[in-house]
Length: 468
Image (cartoon, rainbow, N blue to C red; front, side, top):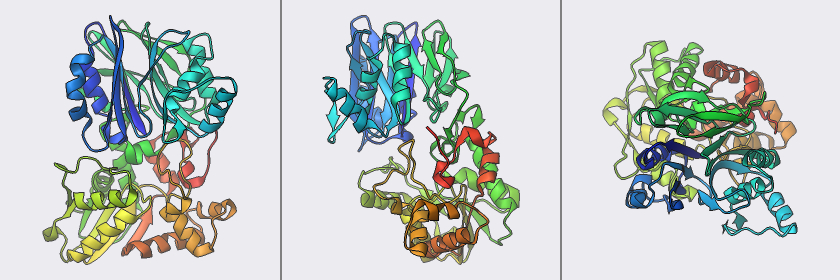
């Protein structure tokens, strides 16, 4: 994933840019960066944030990043933002993108004699490739439209130019952009969380494919939104920040409704309800409130020296870090029947360790309710649940154990929540995790909790439905 923030002010924008970008730190773990425009031109700074906070890496850079407009990015992939020189003029660019046809687009560029300066991990930098596609046209607006049409996957971007900031949401709106206003300027953000403490009021949610030019005096839509939308459902269920809203729909509100829906179909007798920190908490509160069962915290998260959820990059070490961060409270566990709510089960490795810890602490029963259906398809459009093997997904591995293969014709039979196959898959996952019981949210209940028409939501991870 990744997150974007930009602002244009009548005065210096550095501190707003710094804190606004920092509010996206939960979305990426690899690189952080900022670029500003001032009277001397453009300046940027990019830092590795794999082992430290964004803030600690950039505080010393702030004196070099003064300017009235700027863009910032937290990236889970490439080094950015980049500053590009072209026939359109100098511009900065930052993206949240997953370009599935990156190699094909780069190969076509090489055939035309185009070269790339940013090459990391053996591949062309996706952000530079997006800039190259933009530069093939005669204006920024036409270039952005052309680039987004060429990309298979998703691409949301910010361009820092002489005129202002161009904010362009992905062609199908898979990731969000929102405009904010305060006295003296405007901002654009992925997470509306970034607005509140900086004094901005959300004034416009960009539609799919919409392009807006932002200046200190206002904003103008220079390409209207399209009719089709496929915004990622997981924004509300899992990786979005609780204080944010997408399409003007509160993340925390959706999580409460997901938990309520889980409770309404469940009659399991338990003593307490809890959430796996952090994103499972909202779902658990919704469940506990609906069932009138005490909500407690038998797991607490130790954050002072373990700030980053997704680090390090090695999966085995990530699992160890995740386990070290969660500490049981035996006084709330011993002899209890526990009901845990969680946003999802991706691989299940960490959750299996958590369940073992609960039993070691004296739990009598450990039940689990998941706020979305079982994941059986890897994400094609964002860098969520990306893996070298689909068998890394707990649901897919269970299907393979049951069927001995995992072809699409087999997988489709497990997307029906009422099918015996689906019940068998859930039972296989329950056995592997060592749970007393396991139930997943029905897709229609999750969609209802979000409150948008299903055709406007991307649900590919659960039912395989998707389009470019």
